[in-house]
Length: 345
Image (cartoon, rainbow, N blue to C red; front, side, top):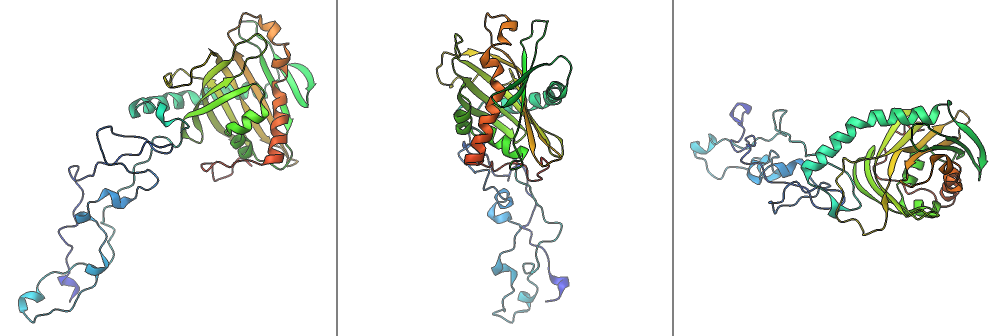
């Protein structure tokens, strides 16, 4: 049949809002419920553009209709009947991109707030990230005010005291050799089993919401130390690529995430993580330095000058030595959403 007689089927029409199927994500660690009234549930791992069309409106021509069949009659009227197009859809075909999930992971899907609340949390954390990272780098790299405490259990340790009522700050550095990248260390930090095996003070932890690899909200509990009751925190974790080969993970307490009512019953005091984190730096000799920085309001009736000299405070950076030995022995559980550009090396 001549090309002039080929026309596009009237059934290939654009979607209208009325025709759009009600699609939302599943309650799973990788998906978010977008509607409580809908009974149709689609995993965010399996959504494709074909799910945004009804069968009648699918823009893909079926193999059966794409190939003209021989006419069974010689009627002249049959020759004028338009047939389905034989070519693939042209550039005018409608393409609907799948809706992106609001977050990528959670250890506790049962504790997630509503979608609207999650969006507000995400926006609030994003607005505070730049200032938190800048403050962390200022203390992690600065020299003024630091008191050298020497090498304690394999870590080069320094402390800093403040005279405005703020708690002391601890800083320590350990070299991890040439075997690991900053991304390896950050994946180690996100492995709760590895954290428990290398930190004697660590009790338990849960990722409440990971919006993406660079922004997380976590809940962590630390065990009783000396006369202090257990402490727990709800923290915002920010990952930031400072430069090629240098990556920082910054932790600060956050009030933007609502208190989850389903957290385990505990006898823990809610402490405040004023500023903490890790700075991973690839050095010219091919090795990597990891620096720990921490400033915590423990909410105890002990003078800050006394806390800054307590063993549990000064020995915190020594946990990096345990972390290096653990990684050398057990390797790293690579996270599936680790950045693929490897700009951390």
